[in-house]
Structure formats: C-alpha cells, structure tokens
Image 1 (tube, helix red, strand yellow):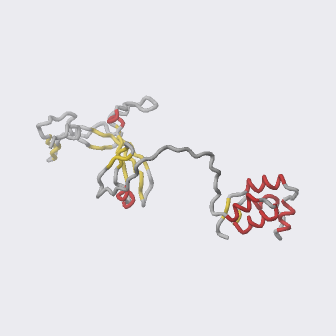
Image 2: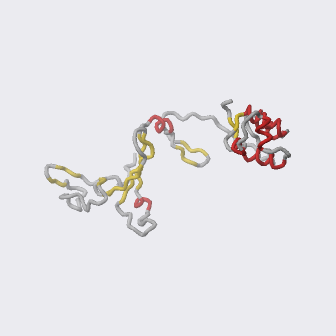
Image 3: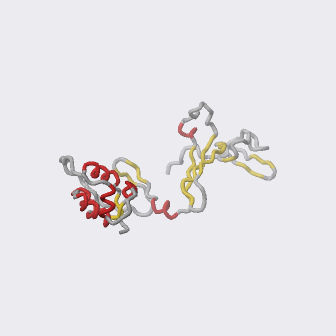
Length: 205
C-alpha cells in the first residue's frame, strides 16, 4: 500500500458523471463520510482499486493495476537510419558529440565537495549590466556545489594586470603601483609582484 497514484481530478470527474455521491462511496468503503477530502491526497493502489470497482470505471482500474500510466501514441514517422556508437573516452579528455564539445569531467564533479566557477563579463565583451552599471574589472565567484555550505555568487574586483581578486569596494591594491612594466619586477615591502601573463598568446609547441 506504499505505492500511491495522483488521481483526485480523475476521481472527481468520474463521480460528477456518476449517480453515486461522495457519501455513498465512503459508506461502501466502510469509511466515515468526509466529503471530497478522501480524494485530495493520493490514494494507494489498493484503495483506488476499490473506488474503481464502486464507480465501475475502467480508466481508474487500469491506473490501480498498472505501474505506469501510458499515453496513447499519436503518430509514428520514419526518419531513416543513423549510426550509433558506444565509445569509452579515457581519463578526462574532451570529445565531440552531435557537434557539441563534451567535457569528460562528470565523475570529478560527482566526487568533489565544492564546485565553483569564475565568470568575468568583461572577458565576453559584456561591459554593462541591465541597469547600465559598469562591469569592467568585476568578477563573479559562483559556488555551484557545496556539500557543507550554502550556494552563493560573490562579486569581486579583478585586476587582470596582476590576475588578482579583491574586495569589490577596494579602490586599488594599496601601495602597489597601478602600472607595471612587463620586464621589471615591482618591489614593495619585500614583496615581488609580476604582471599576469594570462592574456598572452599561447606559445606554439
């Protein structure tokens, strides 16, 4: 009796076409009359089968005795033959399927406790949001999965010159100069900072 079926609308529709009323059905089921409340919750298949017998309804009887409510097939058309493949991709290499590049990393995501993404609108030439506010130098850290914490999107300041993230409210990086030569190191308080090479062209191999 642990298997339930959502049938309230079907039962109410069937009763409206029947000569029986809710009170008569409750009496036949040896239950106290409670109006249509009996059908507001999903019924077990055993009780639904009894209601189907009382109402003499084939549709309800099929629902009570079938694991699945099948929909009628409207049409069948021939689309020709296509080759199908069963391919195993080793490790975490990517592959192409139906003209889509598929990232073979599902197992990594399932095993990971935290999955996060970095989104920079400026990288995609999106320089303003819907309200017209500048998105230059703005990055979003998206926590998409966290087994032990909340899911959240955090906006940060991103300075591509140093490939560094900081609080969005910070005007700069303190005492660090705003410009740095690509050949010179910047010294400040015994800290060596080098410009980012993330936007440099890849070296061909």
